[in-house]
Image 1 (cartoon, rainbow, N blue to C red):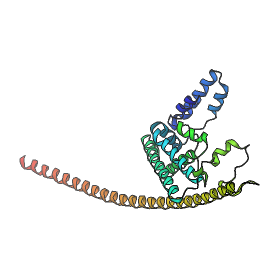
Image 2: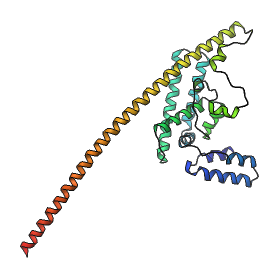
Image 3: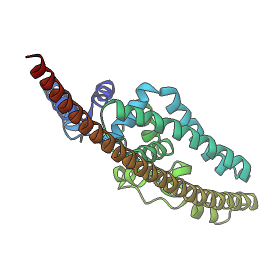
Image 4: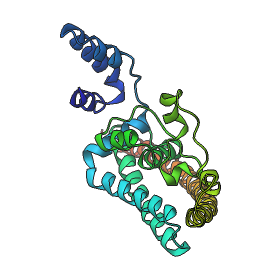
Length: 274
């Protein structure tokens, strides 16, 4: 069944519904009613999610590297690592994300799909949320069977807690507390060593929060710079196109005039010869 799902999520979005219905029909014919019902309920993935799934097939080493760097970020925080170690781990994670985002852009363009800034942000957020999420999400990323876009938030982006969309499947479980709250409140009767460890974890969580806030600010500034640069480039190209169109129109007009003069000269020559 897992292999069949992998094959299903490999098909282009435009072909997903037909492939899904065919697989559900095949499973019903084979008396696999539960599997057929699960497959029939699957929704067509959006283009960004489809691109994320293709990365597992085309760039498995890069996907594995993202999972490894995300684990290092989480480990650095849980150990209460110093700022330099945490920043280095986060830089490696950002580099892995950026490489996969570029790969997803190529996938989208190669399939004739839109690779807009919004689509690529969805790719990045889904990659990050899956790489830092539950074991089930990490395995879905690794196997290329992501079903929907995800959005990391706060500590979940770094600590690997389940993101909001993932928690929908665990509604019966009690809501998890924020990592900093868990770390800051030791159990009654806890030994002094445990209290010190909890305090260290709380301090580490605060460092992560500050680093995350700075990182989000940096990304927003970078995105704003890129958008301004794209706007300037679009304006420059538009002006260039207008100039070229004017030159082409002038050239066409000159060519028409030259042809008219040529025709007149030929007519005069013909009259003289006759």
